[in-house]
Length: 104
Image (spheres, rainbow, N blue to C red):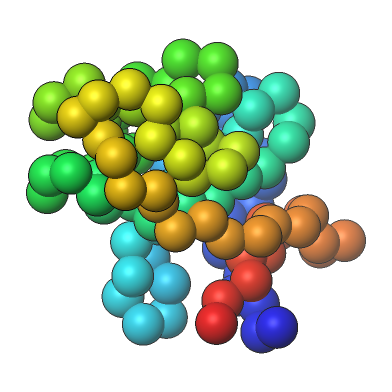
């Protein structure tokens, strides 16, 4: 599966989230959960809000628009009104210090 180079891992503080745009202009959210990196689509599946602007609580991201939550490890909705999962991207940390995401 093709990969895209995203952020340097040093640009993403532990237990934080940052927005990144893929080459096709898709907004994704990249998460650092204590040194483990995850990526999901950045737009909430319930309303037009960027999840990267929400609050990260443990393994969950809280949508800033309506406070629904998603598990960032799986993309699955946790709390209503969210019911549709987020697209999840596989990540890996490259030897060059960048986070890579698998894209279709």
